[in-house]
Amino acid sequence: MSELRQDPTTREWVILAPERAKRPQQGPKKKRGADIPAWDEKCPFCLGNEGRTPPEVLRLPLSKRTSKWSVRVVPNLYSALNPDGENNKGMSGDFFRHREGIGVHEVIIETPSHNTPMALMPYEHVEEVLAAYQQRYNALKANRQLKFITIFKNHGWSSGTSLIHPHSQLVATPVIATFYNRKFDVAHDYYVDVASCLYCDLLAEELERGERIVAETKHFAVFHPYASHVPYETWIIPKEHRASFGLSPPTHLAELAMVLRDSLLCLYRGLNNPDFNLMIDTSTTEDEKGPFYHWHIRILPRLSTVAGFEMGSGIHITTAMPEDTAARMKQIANSCAGGECISFKQEG
Ligand SMILES: [Zn+2]
Ligand SMILES: [Zn+2]
Image (cartoon, rainbow, N blue to C red):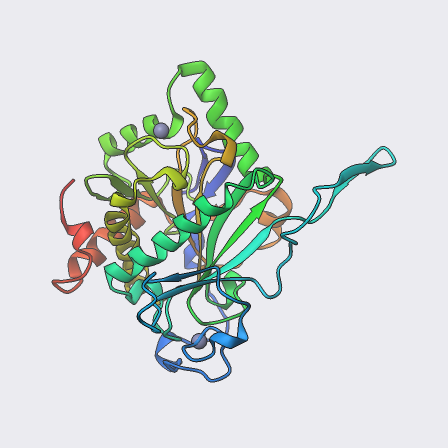
C-alpha cells in the first residue's frame, strides 16, 4: 500500500510505494570496489601526482616535517566559478537577471589511496576529512561576498562523479540555492510560529518515537526521515542546536566521524557499495548563530534513477518505508565485526 507523506523541513510531498520495489529491474552490472587498483598513474589525486593539481590550499596533517599527506584540498581545475570577481549584477530587460560567476570551487582529496572509500577508512582518517571540511568552510566565510558554502560528495558514476579517487567538493557562492532558501523559509516560519527550532523539535519527536532512529550517540543522532526521498536516505544531526557546521565544536568531530563512517559502512555492506550523494546542509554564513536553522548531513543512496515523473513534478516515489530501512540498518550494524560500527552499537 502506498502513502503520501510531507517532508516537514521542505513541505515537499513524497510518495512511499514499497510495492514498486518488486518491479523487474534491468541494467548493466556496475564495477565494484574490488576491481579498482590502489594507485593509478593517470589519476591526478593519487600519491606522487600532486603536481597535476593546482597548488593546495590545505594539507593535513599540518606538520611540515613529513612529506606524506592524508588529506589535501585544492582549487577545482575545472571550476564553474571564478574566485576573483567584482560581484557585478544587473538586469537586462524586465526578466533576465544575471550576475558575475564569482565564487570558490574546491576539491577535498580525502586520501592518497585510489581505492579506499570513506566507508572503509579508519575513524581517525574520516575525522581528518571532516576537519579539512570545517577549516576550509571557516576560512572562506571570512570573505563576506560568499553567502553560502556547501560541502558535498558524489560517490559512484550514477551520483555524477567524474573521478573515482575518493574526494568531496566545496562550493561557495554569493547566492543561495532555491532548495536551501526553501529549507530556511520553512524553518524560519516555524520559529516565528512556535519560537523554537524545527529541527530540535523534530529530532526530539523522532527520538521519542524511535521507529526511524538508526543510532544515537552523546552528541549525534542518525535516522531515516519520515518522508524519505529515496530508500535508505540517512540523516546525521547534532543534538545540540547550531545553525552552522562551521560552528560545530572541533571536539565533536571524532564522534561525528564515527557515526558518519558507520552510516556509510552499513550502506556499503547492506547495499553492496551503492552510489550516493552526501550533503552538509548548513545555514548561510550570515545566519550562523541563528535560532531557527540547524545543520545536518544528508546521505542519499542512488538505488534507482530519477525518472520523468520525479523530474517533471518534483514528487519522489520512494520504494521502501524508512521504518523498515532504519530497522535493516540496525541489523546490518549488529552483524558487523567487533571493531566495526561501534557508534551504532552503543546506547546514547
Ligand atoms: Zn587516484
Ligand atoms: Zn535546533
